[in-house]
Image 1 (cartoon, one colour):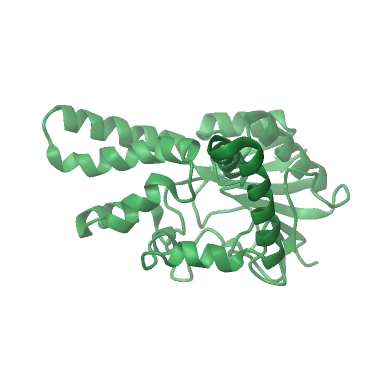
Image 2 (cartoon, rainbow, N blue to C red):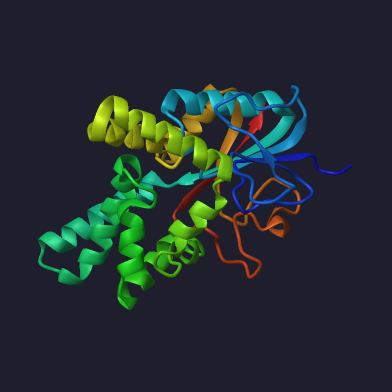
Length: 272
């Protein structure tokens, strides 16, 4: 029997044989769907549900609701695999770099600066990419070598030619949406002035889905999974899974075996 698998918020990493959903599909085989709404499938539809670097974009309460929705569409005994930034490792990185910096080790400033960005930038930024993107684009070779240890292949996506990322983002925006946004901004400027436009821009960005609204370590993620009705919660490595032939899907690993996002926490659980 073939595996019935669902990838939520897949971005550009998806399997053609899976059902793939994303808010902004990167391929015609990916279905457009906003995960703030219920997962659009009947109960017990899938053997596997997977989402990577999605859960942290929901508030704690909304994240629990997403896990419960994942449980609903899984068959009994099915596997949920969740990947999130690993808060425990970020804190360990910060504390280690902090101790070295206060002891006078100037070489530790790269680790310290990046740890601060990992903890805070994606929760407080007011523009796409935030300070992380600026850091990566201006980094020297030593800084890039360290950041690559944290980001893996994600670093290549974050470091296009200057100006290229903004251009690509504009090109992905549909013309009709751009026109509607222009009209809204003109009307708002007339009604509320420059301050109104600024508040509107910040509000729209905060609703864009880019910001992190919660963080997880192995204890809190396992607890959330248990509370959502799962059992047998287990931390995994990127290439390790209960899912048959997992490594062949190349979702958490590259074809050469490297971890796609080394800064991640990987965890699986079973639907009761």
